[in-house]
View 1 (cartoon, rainbow, N blue to C red):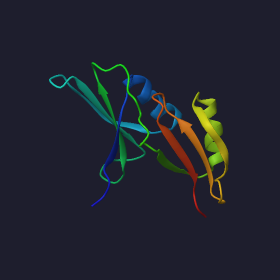
View 2: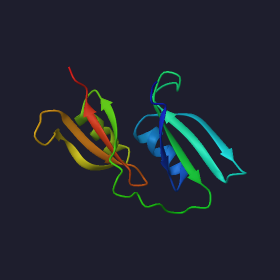
View 3: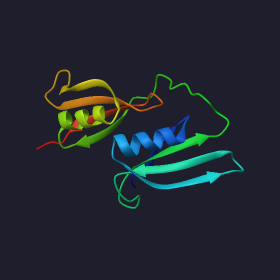
Length: 128
C-alpha cells in the first residue's frame, strides 16, 4: 500500500493551480472537468503519480466558500533549505504564517505557508 494523494477543496481552481505551480514549484500533472457532477479535478505534484504522492484539488462549480474546520492540520513538504524556500515563496507572493526557524522544543528547522484557500503547508528542512 501507499498514499496516492491528498484532496483539498478549492474555491478558485486557477488561483490554486497558480499557487502550487508558481509559488511551490509543483507541476500540474492532469486536470479533468466532470460536467455531470459539476466539478473539476486537478492533480499536482513534484513527480509522476506512479512514483509520488500528489495533491488533488477539487473545484465544485457551484460552491464559492468552504469552512476549513478545526480537524485539518497541514500538509508537510521536505525542502533542502527552509530559509531559502521561505525567501523564494515570499518573492513569488506566497503568504508565510511562520518564518523559518527551529521548531518549538526541538532543533528541526520548519516554516509554515498558507495557500489561497487557507490550507497550511509546513516546510521541513531535509535531515542530513
